[in-house]
Image (cartoon, rainbow, N blue to C red; front, side):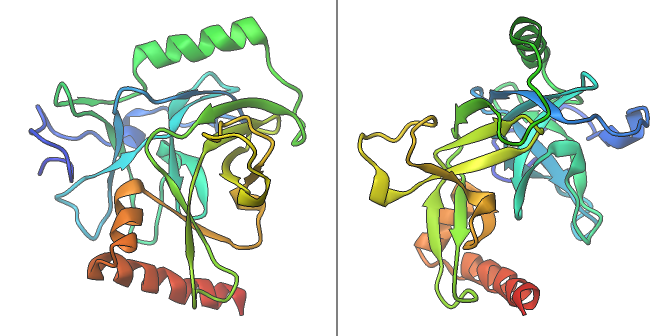
Length: 238
C-alpha cells in the first residue's frame, strides 16, 4: 500500500477495511453529540479507480450516534457524512484513520474522543429529535469551503465554513457568514450572522482546504475537477 496522499512517512502495516471487521447492524441512529478534531487526524479513503492508493481527507469533527458508535465527520460532495458512509460510483470507502504525527493507522475512533463524547452525552443528556433545536456549535478547523453558484456554474463563489451546527434531528450543518450582517470580527461559530450552507439555494459542494485554494490559484487540475462537478450540477438543475 502506498502512503496516504499528502502525508509524510509511511504506514506500519496493511490498511484494513473497517467494514469487513465491523458487525452489521441497522444503522447507528441519529448523531447526538459532536466534538472537533484538534490533533490532525485524517480519514483514509480509497476507491476502485486507485486500489493501491489511499487519500487522506480532512476531519471536521467526531460524532456520537444514538447506538454509541463514534466516527469521524467528513465534508463530502453536498453534505458532511460519517466516514464509514463515504461512497461514490467507483465503490469508494473509508479504510480507517491516519495519525500523521505517529505514522500509524487507527481502525476505529481514538479512545480519547470516544471518552469525551460519551462523557458529554452523560453530562448534558440527549436533545429532543427536533430539527429546530441547536444542540452544539463547533468551529471549523481544517479550512473547509463551500462552493456557491446561482447561475449553473457560469460563476462560482468559494466561502469559508465558519463552523458546524448539530441539530436535534442529528443533522450537521455547515455555517457560513452573511457578510451583510457581520457586526464583530472574527466571526465565531455561534454568531447570529451565520446561515446553514446546505439549506441555501446557491449551495453546490464542499471542498477541502487544499482543493479550494488550488481553485483560487486557478490551477488546471483543480479547475478541471470543478468543471466536471459543474457538468453534473447542470444536469441536476435542468
